[in-house]
Structure formats: C-alpha cells, structure tokens
Amino acid sequence: MSVLSDLLLLLVDRLGDGPSAALFGLITGVVFGVAAQRSRFCLRAATVDFARGQLSDRLTIWFLTFSTAVVWVQGAQLLGLMRASDARMMAVPGSWSGAILGGLLFGVGMVLARGCSGRLLVLAATGNLRSVVSGLIFAVVAQMSLSGMLAPLRDRIAGVWVTSGGQNLNLLSALHLPQGAGLAIGLGFAALALGLARHNRIGASRLIFGAGVGFAVALGWVLTFALSSLAFEPVQIESATFTGPSANTLMFFLTRPAVLEFDIGLVPGVVLGSFLAALATREFRFQGFEGTAPLRRAMIGAALMGFGGMLAGGCAIGAGVTGGSIFVGTAWLALFFMWIGAMATDLLLDQRHPLPA
Image (cartoon, rainbow, N blue to C red; front, side, top):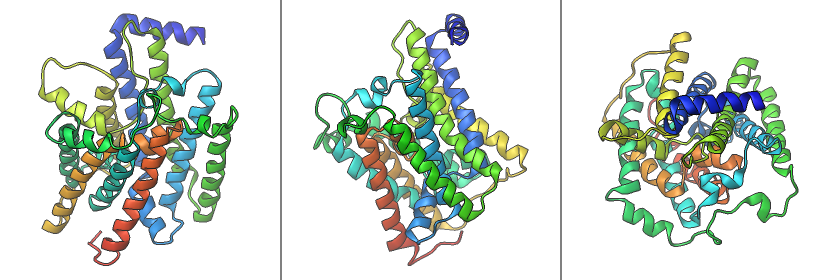
C-alpha cells in the first residue's frame, strides 16, 4: 500500500488536485463504459422485464451489477480503502420527499426514453442518435434543476421531508447491523444473481462485464477516497453518477473559466469506453428516430429524468448503484420508487400501446 500511496502522491504533485480527480473520473468512466456496453446493463430493461413477469437475462445483469458494487465497496471499507461516512452523499442531508417523487419521475422517464441516463450515454457513444438527443435534453434539464429556473421548485419539493441530524441516513447503522453486514447483504444479492444467471444460461463473458460495471463504481469510491487523503484542497469522495456530472460537463464546455474535477473526466470516460467497445465488437452504427411518436416520448422522458434525477439525489446509477453500495437511506428509497415508476409506466402505457422496438 505504501508503494501505491507514493505513486498517487507523485501523480497529485505532478498534475494537481483537480486534474488528478478528472483523470480518476476518466479511468472510472472508461471501465464503466466498456463494461456497460458489453454487458448491456440497463435498469429500464430490468424493470420492464420484471413488470412482465420475466426473470430475464437483463434482470440478472442488473442484480449482478448491484451485488458486485455492494461487495466490492463493502469489502474496500473493511480493508480501510473507503469510508462511507466521508462520502458527500452520506455526509450531507438527504431528502425523503425528493427520493420518492424524484424516483417516480425518473422511473417514468427512463421507460419513455427507453433507457436511463447512464444507458443513454453508452448508446450515444455507439452511434445511437436517439440517445444523443435524449442525453442532451437530460443534461440541459438537469442543469436547469441544479441552478436554473427549475431549481426553486426542486428545493421546495426536496425541503418537505429531509433526513435529521444534518446528514443522510446510513441504513446499516440505523438497523444496528454489525460490521460486515453490508458485505453479507451484497453476497446474498450475488447468490441471487448467479442463480438467475444459471437459469438464463448467461455466458461467462457477459457475466464478467456485468460485474465490471459494479467494479467501476467501487473503483471511483476508492480512487476519490485515496485522493482526498493526499490532496492539498478538499476533494469530494464520490463515484459514478450521471445527473450532476452530465450537467457539470455540459457547463464545462460552455463556460470559462471551468474547473477540472471527477465529474468532468467521468462522462467523457464513459463515452470513450463505450465507443471503443462498440468498435472492437463491430457494433457501432448510426441509428435515428423512427417517426415522431418515439421522438416525442424520448424528449418527455429525458426531461423527466433530468428533473427527477436531480430531485432524487441521483440517477439509476448514482442512487441505484453508487448510493446503494454504501447504504445511503434516500438512495435506496429513490431506487425503490424508480422501480415503481418504471413498472407502472410499462403496465399502463407500453403493454397497452407498444411502440416498435
């Protein structure tokens, strides 16, 4: 560990705090992008299959990704490589009301847009022009919800019901569970995922890449935690999420002066990783909208995800996997309502009036 610490210290001395954080974001993003593209990880697909009573391969990959993230992150904590209490989403107050309403809106939006924000980013890098349009709308609305005309509405809803004590709720501590309980819960989910994988006869390659998405989440946590202990200026301990980073990356390229940070490396990293994976497997091809109805749905869905994700404190990845891996109370609640919103939308809309694939 001392050798690794010396290398990180040398890197920070050479590049500086901000560029080092951006580099770590880029590395995390590339790993995420490659793994997500190859495994076809998608929460929207998992929820739709579950709503239709299908224990499918797509549901399996989601459980595998989630369980892998929990196992790696909780294992890293036991080894002293990560401390959940220092993570920004745990150290600041969370919003129960935001998690409920934001999760519902995000769930509805990702079904309408045919993919969550992370999935849209991956698909855009493989030539899917529908995802490019949806992703841009998502980023603009997220920025509007962060600091624009939608920010007052978001603050008003989020302030209705917040966590007490000036910080978010750690579910493991709230339930008085012993050290190592988080790892045991992650292993339980992993056993479920492997059982489903055997049922669906999923190949080893796809399982490895599905687990790689979860590993990318853990990698982001560990890298930013290590940087925070070496940096001269305060560094946020964070990992993969795409609501805030999409908005920040958009503004990075639109405004000057711009500040380098983890977010600014993460989004381009995902695009680069997904693009390279698509090229390597000859899956890169341009795709567009087929008619006005899919376009209209995608635009509405992307807007709902932009506002809902910012209100919920994270997207399907940020709250659903990254926040879930450290047992942030509002993240688990937001994830639950994302499932509810997505399943309800599929039941009430898509199963009655299906659109062409």
